[in-house]
Image 1 (spheres, rainbow over the protein chains, first blue to last red):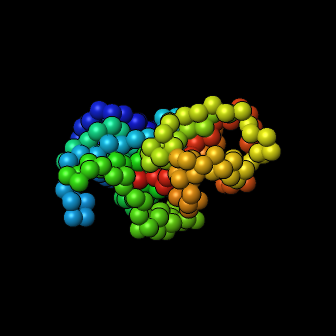
Image 2: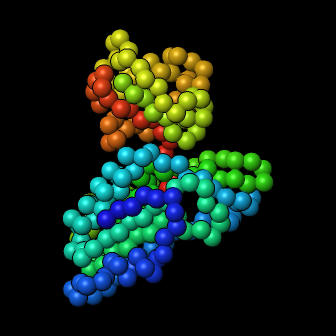
Image 3: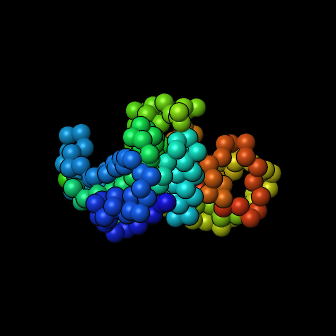
Length: 153
Length: 83
């Protein structure tokens, strides 16, 4: 399942909902991404997440489907926020459940790695020196690439 | 067709969206990018480095050789930075 929203979410409640009523779940894995207050040297006052409504949902659903195909998952949830967020605020939630832990761990990591390089979101950082768009990182591409043709098992 | 711009491409070009008839002679994404660049100004500046431009047609990533039709929604944006 995917959700794109401006408002915050409650990670505990989301995790509880992911496993509720399914006694076939043996393990759940959750990743929560937060706004950091440091970017290189300058302090960040806030960041604004822009996205492409329509394509964002489509792309997240595609990534979610890919994970379901690669691993034996019981349930998944991706939540991604947009709008202006301050340091310490939650940006993204990725939750996966499966009968055994390895699939949940791997799928969770896969989802956040692919999301970072494929879902159409852009971060605009506000610092004391002004606003600037965050540049894509080669390390994120490398993290996404290692899942190429890999998974399942 | 509808052309959408996001993030710093939108800022450089100065608009989030424009409605254009499919320009004469343009049949694919590469053709549209060349045509937009030839308009100069913000378009030329925003699209100067092809390595920094991602393209989606009807909300799906495509390559430069993807064919275009008049009813398409084309989106141009920089590499994504969500998560």
